[in-house]
Image (cartoon, rainbow, N blue to C red; front, top):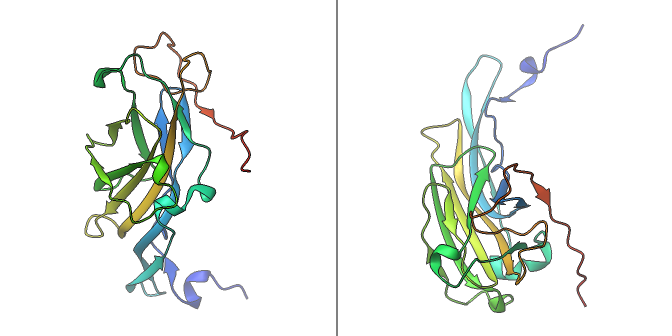
Length: 193
């Protein structure tokens, strides 16, 4: 006869067996951040409902060594040279983490993973972009006491400043006339030479 999976061994009782996806959203533009190094635990349970913890670790390249794995950069424009003229991005996780830390480097440090990072101040899950081409590292932590899973994950993405605000998928500060929000996936048309 048929046997249900529960009789055979352990089944995953957690929703997440690895860190969730991170989408970086700014106005009409959005990109997927690259998931790098993480350590993660989740619960599995056997046929009689006894649960145990399962751990998984993944070693990813440093953010500054990961350009070739990253999605296209997030383009942005500024209204003026003041801090108020800088756009903010929102970090949208599949499941919200319990804490978020963001560090960054100017993009000219790509390839130099020993460069010292700058800490970026985060409010909730948003932060203001730097007024230059910049690499961001997002460190997110999920508390396993609050969920049936938990751990720490490193994500990275980078931004490129554009001069013109007329490009359709550019991330601009909030003083924007567009009322309807459409998320545009950015396609990288540049090729590496």
